[in-house]
Length: 473
Image (cartoon, rainbow, N blue to C red):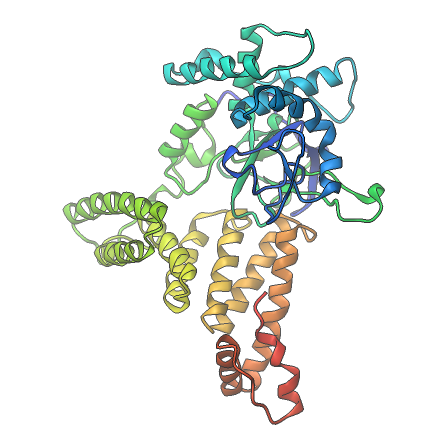
């Protein structure tokens, strides 16, 4: 792998330690979520406040709007000029250029590399990507507004290339949905490894304190996943590990234009588990048949899921899992993908008992494949724990929630909104578990009454004290 410049640890780091934090150089909300996500802190909220000038940008409140005005000021005028806001790519390119002009001649100790020094790979773009680039540049030139300052199409193309290769997808405050995209120059210096020693999370900052001096910016945090020696290279994964090494290598070639030769790709580590067959040792022909069926079924499942036809999704998942039984192992990627969708959709329609069974099998497979402190693993275990909790399986639910909390303390830190929410759930399930251990029958009767929203008949003061335990957060 032809690595970029890279960064190394200048001291020994321990698991969960923040290596560095970096505010976004420029960031925008996705077009499709422009009215549902705050353009300042990137939190997803109901009833956002709309910018009265451009009528495009939305904010939690005046505090967020004021905090973001320096970023939005030029954009606001440009959107008013052309009436309709352009695509997120064009908006991000413009924000990058406005920031470059604003910072011209100003040195920053915290920024290790200037934006226009980042890789752009414009010369490596495919014909289809070049066509899209030409469209983006054309739309940018209609949108751009900076007095008389103009740029060549080559320079604008370079900025779009930099965004394509280096932009970081930003999630909402729950970490459940991608809501925008941003550029973080220092982060761009951290090289890829499929089994990295660091992870990146978005901290949405804090604008709620009464004193503005206590406010903090949205920023990414690079966190150590385990012990890192002084002098060791810092790495993150640019792609999800849950793919065969050849598939990950293809994704990296197509998106980032390099050939990954990390240990896990070179030695095809865990590929055998991702393609494993059941212990019953089915014939090669049977495995081939079920693999083909699974691929076709996953396409149908995704189509039905997008259309919101959840009954069809559940039906297809059950049929596919039945076909995979005694043929594919529970670590096989096709089976894990079906288990993931099945558990998610069944939870959504409140069929928690069946969802919990599928989620447990999925997580057991994940734990054999992912790094033990992988953020996606932590989130999956958290959702599985909550599903078990909702299914009334308090012992398994609490154990998984505790395990997830341990992972998220490393990947997100104790003050992230996701970790804080999980800590509240952990305290709730801990109380419920104590009740369950004291009197299982009372636990289930109180739980059933709470779920039905019926008055709780109780004869003792001890029972009175635990009535509130079943109000789900």
